[in-house]
Image (cartoon, rainbow, N blue to C red; front, side, top):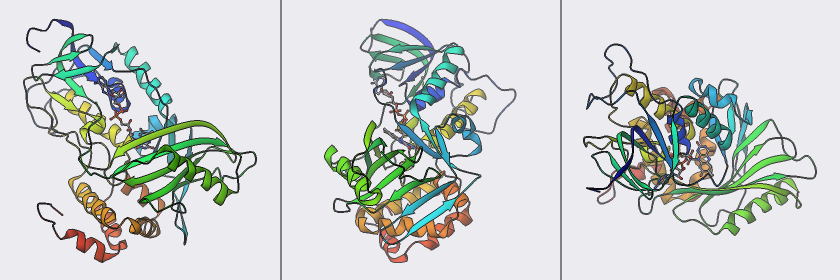
Length: 394
Ligand SMILES: Cc1cc2nc3c(=O)[nH]c(=O)nc-3n(C[C@H](O)[C@H](O)[C@H](O)COP(=O)(O)OP(=O)(O)OC[C@H]3O[C@@H](n4cnc5c(N)ncnc54)[C@H](O)[C@@H]3O)c2cc1C
């Protein structure tokens, strides 16, 4: 890195033009606030205004849908959603649990709509964009790329993190389908339907019905090992055939993903030029569910609020430590006994009303609500999971 010619200099450098990178780009440069703030740790005084550059490795290849429960601070995103549902279900082979919420509906937002909006807002704010692959970052603020070096006053890094070895992964393929006759209830999203092949681990079908003939259907697994594409595709076809009696649906679009269900590093580097991890890299994914979109927005809001007060936050994780602790325990239980998963999700759906479910899944639970979830769970599997294994923590 030393002696490398610097091709570009910028105040704020955002690495990655995905969800977190562009959600941040639309908010930068932050305006300095008046007076001191209690938020964050006063480290170095970060630059609060100036030029922002987003470096993205590739033009976007795949569009997909982000599902989230609508909270007040997600109003912008909710307004752009393709559709939202005030009713949703969790289904096991034995029962269907239906929840309702008009306060916090479940929204389905197309990634293209959100990213285009963020990019437009950022461009209007003077943010610059360039295409390059970041190959190294020094704590002196010099970033190596395949198109030369960039010097920055502040670096925000959203390159996807590597999940820890053996971590549970949420992996899925989704098909947006059109059926020849009406088979979907357009008013009710299906968050989990466990009436599918459970032979390879925790597996459920997720359905976002856009109309009575069109829906996104995803075959989703929670397990440490990805499956061949054929596994998920067969599961989607079987669901259409077995549950909806459709064998000639047209596939309009396909999406695929693998989201680590683990706590990933989110430390802010302490060098002269801070490197701030954001998005999944900054710990935004909720380990027990794989939900990230709403948490990324919380993370970016907290970060820009701190920056506008000339502070650096001590962490970029948007999660409460107690929620992470509960998630660790939950993941340990379902890793040990995957066959329990439908029962656990059903118990939660039975115990909570729609508002409570939305708040819990969005990291907005009160202690009372957390207790309600804990009391709904079968006791022994969690007690056993509390017993520390050698070298591990509960
Ligand atoms: C198909 C799919 C569906 C999902 N659905 C949901 C959902 O319904 N609800 C939900 O809450 N979450 C969902 N998620 C999870 C989460 O919201 C996304 O993973 C989210 O995009 C994470 O945002 P991010 O900015 O951290 O990462 P990304 O959006 O992946 O952005 C990272 C960016 O960094 C770029 N990059 C990588 N390496 C380099 C490099 N060396 N140099 C320059 N740029 C680089 C990449 O090209 C990419 O654009 C889904 C994820 C996927 C993949």
